[in-house]
Image 1: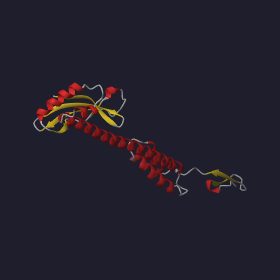
Image 2: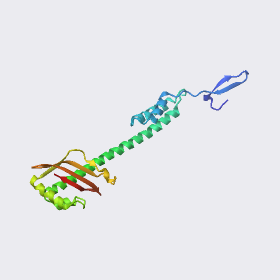
Image 3: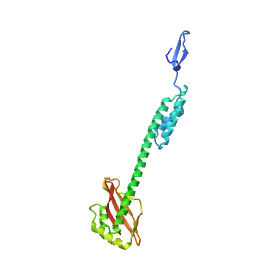
Image 4: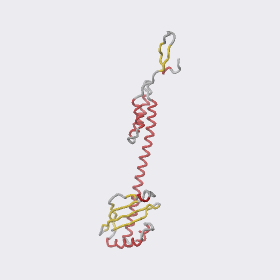
Amino acid sequence: MPQDERNYYAEPDDSPDQVKYRRMPPPPASGISIASLVCGVCFCVPLVTSLLAVIFGFIGIRKTRDPEVGGRGLAIAGLVMGVIGLSLWLVVISFFYILQQTISVQITEAQSVAHQFVQDLSEGKVDAAVAHAVPELDRKELVKASTSMKAWGPFNEIVLEQQPTPLMENNMKSMFDWELRGRAIFNRAEKPVRIRLLKDGSTYRIEKFEIK
């Protein structure tokens, strides 16, 4: 008699005194266990298939407590792959969320520097404006722009015509270099303005300034 009687069944032999024992065929795998494995393998739908794999895996494992229901290995594999899939998707989603928030903060900082730069020029504070610029920016051009702004009245704001554009030509030295295009609003005038800003440590510096 085999030690594990549950996996064998008795079959009479030709001899009346002998009995053959044959291994019983494994129970068929449950559909829920197969579904768990399939969902665990498929990452096509973010989070959904992985979550289904975990749910089906738990259900499949519980169902296989019945000796007549198989597929426990499939359910466990689907459960494990579902957990891995959920973890990967959460990492990816978290990464893009943090990246989006970081870019939003950087754009706000760049706009603030650009606003202060134009504000200083409009008030005749050329030295203060120069402090926000790269050394290569021509001071004479800034003085000329500052003189022109006096006729336009106090500066109010910069209204962007489009979202700030990242500067790709800098060979990706920094992914937070921007070009702002819009209109500078003064009390007595509205002027097209174009400002390029480069990330310099923890702040931004004006690389190029055009106002007409």
